[in-house]
Image 1 (cartoon, rainbow, N blue to C red):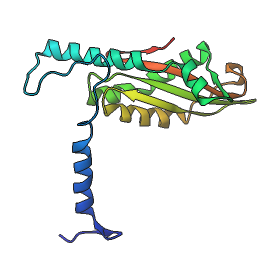
Image 2 (cartoon, rainbow, N blue to C red):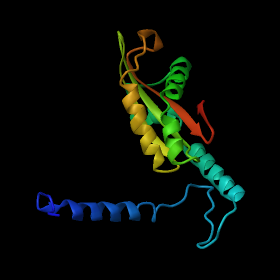
Image 3 (spheres, helix red, strand yellow):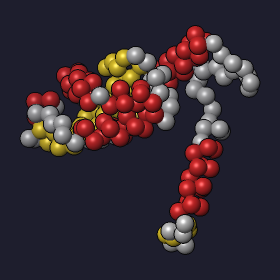
Image 4 (tube, helix red, strand yellow):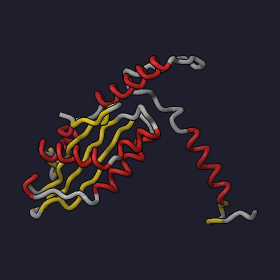
Length: 180
């Protein structure tokens, strides 16, 4: 079968390069603070594995920046979203079933999503994930799904004054909760 060439790189070579990159991902990544890594060759019981995954999720969520910290880092024009906006995003997120898609890939998936909602005088014009931190790459599926779903979400002007509002949701194993 002949190779298809794209800018003098064959698709088969490109696939091998991509596979090597995916294989190398995460090898050098340090575990989250508080996460314990068992010695190589050690097998964990199901209970121990579940506890390890819970500790990893807890350490990631505990280390996440709050909406206030994100707004301070981003500077002027950014506001902390209201509780009403956060709770509405929570409902819309649950209804999108995006987290369920990620959990189908990784049943122990957990993480934190910071939302940006750009408000004008007539209401929201842009709703998107500003930043996300996940315990595994399955979270990328959730982030993409949420950004696609959020294109249809709109908030009335009563949700906040003009500016970019940042709010945060936490996804914990077996649940999604609104952060403080």
